[in-house]
Image (tube, rainbow, N blue to C red; front, side):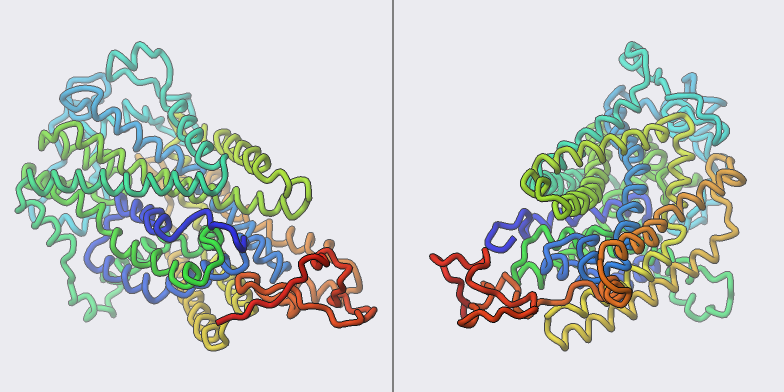
Length: 609
């Protein structure tokens, strides 16, 4: 890409990387969790983010291309990361579609259809919301009350919108809505069609190349922020500030006495710190295949290479609290209006139940409910586009290096590959829009990250090896490689701790437990991506011809930096051959007969200031 304009510039990157904040809509951190999140962000995330962006920028390759070149025996780690990323997209597209559909349901009827009591989906009389002790602190609520099905908003979500089945194996079919005359007249299920429309939008964002994709993301980023700030501004200007202040005080309150009770196994300190750790690691794409591709898209200039990591870290630090600040006036005032009732502020029910109840009870104009759900939808779509673009770019890069025909017709290959990925995604996601679809979303959410400690350990090792082989400053390589190694060890240890502590926990939803055969399915989905590692090892050994020692040298060391081929960003070309050319067995001896040396334009070294 030397000499070309990079598909994405730093301004685009600054707006594209706002999408990680969207997870804070459903994982609203408490004060101690937020403190832990910021510490982990600056201590554990900086080295892997810096290294991934820099080597992706310098080598102009995605993660699979980087490992194939420098560490072929472990290039399967890159493929594993891509498979895990695709599995996340498979269940995230239906979930993001739910957010988008709620945006239109918000304006379907007045008053809000989800807050009414005399409907066919109200399975029992709606006395209002669940009563609990009034001294419960909202900032530390993590579990849904047992009688949450009495909430009219919860009844609408489960019984009308999802029409959720009572068993994970009871697929039934797609939900057919009846909450308005318009959807009744449709006489069919809208949800799977909306999911296909979401995939179609993703396809259009991917199909026409990285430059078009970058501009679409560049538009979506400011749109997400504009919608969020609009809803936030209305909440703080029209609602009682006491409710907002009380909610934020209870949410951000730091109980420092927890540090004196570390010997007590029931102290919430460990839980809060693990919660903050998971928030950062699941939001910022630190241990995914995304960052090398983002580095590649910014070109190979020195400026973008050395400061792009700052945008990832600082933008997330500045925006990760925006969702909870936006929701605070609504939830806080809802708690004041209904002081003896409990609402969940963590999990997707915070969006579909708690915020829906706030819009109803506080009589918020429907346009602001529309804008709120659209903001969540847009942020989720940004993540999906970035993730699937990463998969697409690695796939197209591999096909282009495999065949000259594909290299010459890269635009066509990109379009066809985008269509193939989208088609497979639609086929895999369609089951998640059935009446048992929410159970499958929970299964995949549990299984994809179950063995994440293995992913982090392998990927961190690969990053250190690949980065150490580059021709950057020796002091920089020593410091960042050591820091990244320490970060990998700590991150792996925390993920392993989380894995061990959650091993006995049986996931479930709506009083349905995921166990037995479905627990086996969960383990199979968690382990399946790692099959790519031994398969890629075998493929790497078959690629290299020669003796056993030569094969081992290639698969373990890859390609070393060619001293006769300096980095192109400095303006270097192959050195001018000596005269006469020496006809030796050295394959790196160049002559004027080479294609790289046309006689009418003899290359030269460019002096570097």
